[in-house]
Image 1: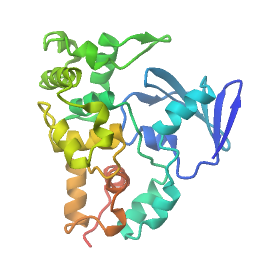
Image 2 (image 1 turned 30 degrees about the vertical axis):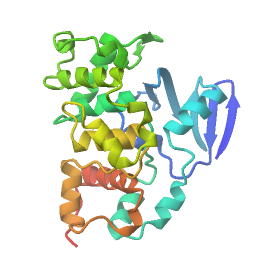
Image 3 (image 1 turned 90 degrees about the vertical axis):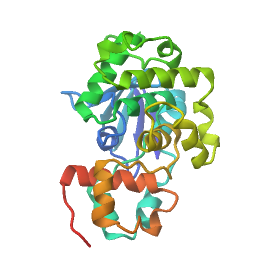
Image 4 (image 1 turned 120 degrees about the vertical axis):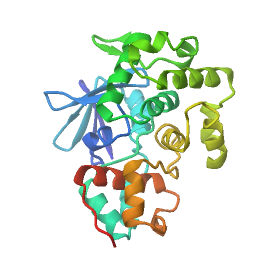
Length: 277
């Protein structure tokens, strides 16, 4: 990977296994959109980011070298050797999914945003999830730039009522958002030390929150904490497991089940392709 700083921001070149569009539009994060100009615009960690594809890589616009190294490099998991991971896949279905969507990486998002976003995602579709999160940020976040807002902190949301959150049109999820914020604020749920815990302990910590079951906990651990062994199971993954892996994932996914899941999830969701083995 080559990093070049210029007057426009930071250019990142020669990164294998990286497709920014795939990373930002495969069900992991909900605050980026592709613009008419063909670049991606969004907010994460309280910062606005525009990413444009270049001839050799990607330009992270208006980003300093320190911001890139401390925020965006971890966010896009650029220190992990995905070439090695992908080369180790020895299962025909995984190879097919990998080859179809080779540039997917697991995003490492801000833990509270990931937790709150996947609480909102329950029994929901992606356009509606994005709409609720947009209203959440506009209503309770801080305005940054011209039309962007930060993701509201748990310190802000812990004092809100279900009536306060009615503007979100989030339904039953509103009370779960408030409960999560209150338990993180009080320390009952030790969200910011989950990365130090064994995964079973981290799961136990998260399901203390009302409305957080196995799927939301696994999504939070995978996309917000960086535990790549976490394995979220939704309707698509249930189909994958029943159709292709009734006896469980192949051995080559041991310890990186979440990465394998993301390739398989996006492939199954986008192509609808499958056969029984």
